[in-house]
Image (cartoon, rainbow, N blue to C red; front, top):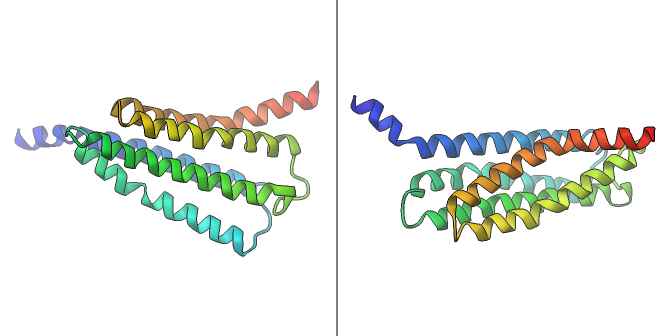
Length: 172
């Protein structure tokens, strides 16, 4: 039927929505994980947290843009805006964490130093890799969007990997 055909033609929108939903979910989980260690706040931290919220809530716009233009000559631009948004999120996540964790400024006094260092290390990868995804968007939309999704999975798994690594280091 025409409705089924029309719905099937919308596959880029479904895929972009799914990828963005999973990525926002991972951002939410990562943010929640940070607050297992962050126990205090100040005005600077609250503004950085608000800036993070700004970029996270912006994600649906480049998602819609990408799904609308993915099969056009402007797909590279839409992909650049999409990956650039994730680059901005990664930068602000780093600023937020670095501000909170610098000299344990806002962290729980009992925070595990191994895990704090592990979070700092894993967050270091975000900006340069999302920057690579941004540059990839001008050569391959699929590679750029795929890299954004793979990075989301990486950040979803690194919390468990870091905890496992710290547990092993404590027992050796």
